[in-house]
Length: 333
Image 1: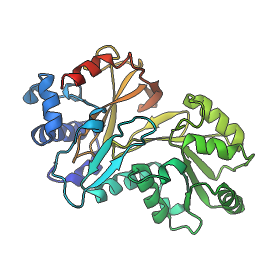
Image 2 (image 1 turned 60 degrees about the vertical axis):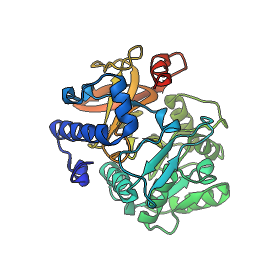
Image 3 (image 1 turned 45 degrees about the vertical axis):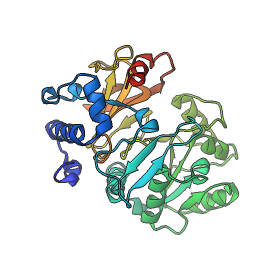
Image 4 (image 1 turned 90 degrees about the vertical axis):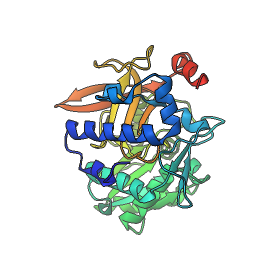
């Protein structure tokens, strides 16, 4: 772990990020047995890792059947788990410092949206509220608490109560964050509920088999039409990460300074692309000091630049044939 773990939030430049990443890599190679075994399997020599593209990325599947930790589990460790609707083997992320997770998502939120105290937070997360161990529910719970607004809260199945609160909020100048899983937001907009531009509608993905899967542009078009607003925003996060990226418009995600996306070649998962072509998404999340900061996801995307700012555009998910190269390596782990 970095000597000053909070230094990741002071990351100001590409050089800062590189130095923090290399330090984190060396620490996790020495202290995370799962990650060390993976690096050794790839025959990567740690002293030769001097750039971001040199760093091996751990396939996200390892969080399903391995204990991915870089510091010992204690009685204070919190266990976050993914939804079992996407797999019979949910991912497990052991978080040894919950305060650090809170600092990560609160600092990131403020970076993109300003103080959460300026918002009323309405969280529409039915499936997630019905189970324990959701990192998304934990994040929204803290956002609701930090907002300190009397109408902030979670909504499970009482949509009528949510609609009443929304109508009340429309008569004020209060900023509102309506955050929810995709299918629940679609159900809500089917109620012919017209919102106003003081509302930020943020979808977190997830049909959970309750709606037809669709690409984000199609989903956003549906929600904009239903809510009669001009923009839908998105959050990109997952159980295995302690940081989030946000799309404020046009479906393009921007990450906080302590998080970075790299794109890997589809047919060669160990090669990092340096163009704007579609490939597998690798994530460096320096907030993952206690687990693994270098994760190869099953998402597809590409990097695009706009006004010298790099954004991530999500393109979908790998199918089974796309992942055969990595899967063969995992089977031999």
